[in-house]
Image 1 (cartoon, rainbow, N blue to C red):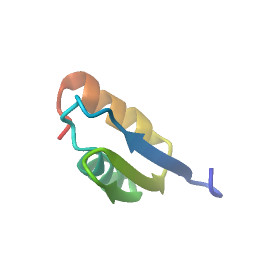
Image 2 (cartoon, one colour):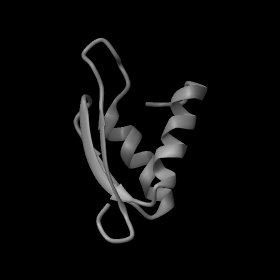
Image 3 (cartoon, one colour):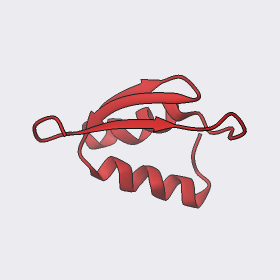
Amino acid sequence: RAGENAVLVFARSADVEIHMGRLLSDTARPLGGKGGGRPDFAQGGGPEEILREAEGKLIAGLAC
């Protein structure tokens, strides 16, 4: 945590094709957070709800 916001790190293994930078950016922006990065690693921050939203996208197969 950094004050009111969660500090977020999204990462994946080489055999997964989901773009972590887009997943974090696309999930964080509507919730007032920030973030982005490479296909395999991304960093950002914002409300903890970003984690639940990203998890939902992954489960639903909607991730980038």
